[in-house]
Length: 338
Image (cartoon, rainbow, N blue to C red; front, top):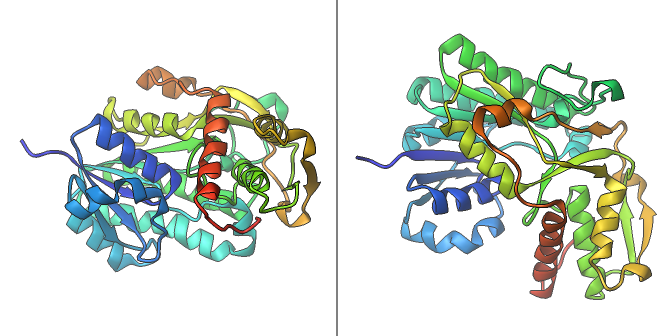
C-alpha cells in the first residue's frame, strides 16, 4: 500500500520544520514542503541530507500570492493531508504592511483551498488561524473558549479572522475535510527573532558573547500570555488530522502556563549568569498601536476530542529557546539587535 503524502505549506518556519521532524520520526508519510524560492533554509539544515536524497522529503516552490504556483504545488504533491501553516505571521509588521498581510493570509488561504478543491478534494486539511483573532478580550470571558467573539487588535489578527472563516466556509460549502485551529502562544527552538520571547533570548545570548551592551530592549511587558511548546503544538496538529477529523471543526489549542511577557523575560534572565548585570529598556519601536493583552485559552474541546495534553514544561521550553540562540551565536552568527 502506498504511503500517505502530506503537504506542509510554510515548512521553513519554526512550526513547519518541527512538524516535519515529528512526521519523519512518528510516521512513514512522504513529506512535501512548500516554500518560496528565497525562503531561509536554516530551520531545515539538520534534515537537508534527507531532502537531497529524496528520503521521504521533497521541497516545491510556491507563493501564497501566486495562484498558478499554488495550483502547481497541489497537483505535484497529491496530498492526503495538508497543514496550511504559511503566512505573514508577525503582528507588528502587519501595521506597516496591512495589504500584504491580508493578501498573503486571506487570499493565500483561498488559493490553497481552491487548488485542493479542484485537485485534491479528499485531503484532510488543517488551516492554521491564530488566538490573535480574539484580540482584546474582557477579563470576564477568560479563559477564552471557541465561541468567544472576535475582536482583532491588528491587521494580522483581522487577516487570521479571514483565514479562520475561509477554512470553515470551504468545509461547509464544498464538503471538504477542513479544520481550523486558534493556537495560542507557542515557542521554542527556531522561533523567529521578531517575536518577544525569542528576541529576549537572542539579546541575552549576544550579551553573554559580548556582542551587545548589557541591555535587553523590550516592548509591552504587561500582556498576559499562555505559553506552549512548539513541539507540543505540532503533536496537536498531527492528532487534529488523524483522530476522527470533523469537517468544519474549529479548536483552541494552547499551553497551561499563563504569565506576563515581563515574567517570560524574568525567567529567561534567570537562566543567565549575567542576570544581575543586564538592564531592561523599553524600545518604542517594539510597541504595537494596540495589543491583544489577555490571551488565556480554554482548550477543553480539543483535548476531549483528541486526548492531547501539553507535555513540555514552560521552563524547559524557555531554556531550550535560550540554548538555541546561544548555539547560533557561538557558531559565529551575526544578527540584528532587533
